Length: 270
Image (cartoon, rainbow, N blue to C red; front, top):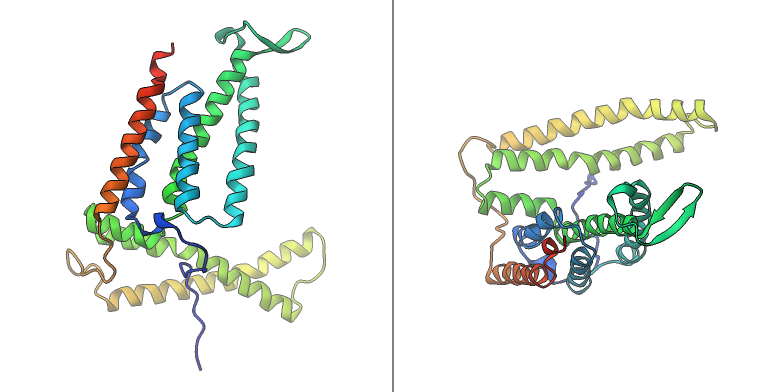
């Protein structure tokens, strides 16, 4: 009798782009200087330029699904609009340019300078998040851990222990779904209303804890069987090399980032 297994990192058959073949450290290191410098810029043009760069890299190299395209095309602009307006309302009118009045209600006035400050903050956040998605949408947890252990000399005891703990999250989700289906088949804790919902969730706790303990014991036994932690280093079954294309990607991204900062030079606007 075969036992069904659940792999939280199994391939879903989604489209894959060129970014998926790059080293995870290259995808993290390439946008990192721009992300750090974006924290201290205050203009509109610089974060908008990096937002365009991030979108171009993701659209050309990430092989995005329809859902992610919808998130980038609708959710991110909507978030920029909401955050921009919110930050504009919170801006101190005494510290912004009051030469243009946008909205005036009684004694309160929304100035153009406040809108500029608010949307500069929103675009800065959106640009930083979009640059982080270059690695986040095209890198798996195991590959990032392997690359960190192999190239950054992170102790494998730390890297693979963190990875094993991280794998518990999707595993819990899978087991919770199985428990819900089993309760539904048996007709346990049916009905509607808050009391029925509390009874259902209370019925999930014990089997979920039991499953978590069993899974933790299996992981511990598997790690002991492989002599985890017995030696200072281990042979990697899946090497994640740092190739010339990774160096080229980092260098080109850094050059492009430097060109954007050089042309716009946001620190000279004050």
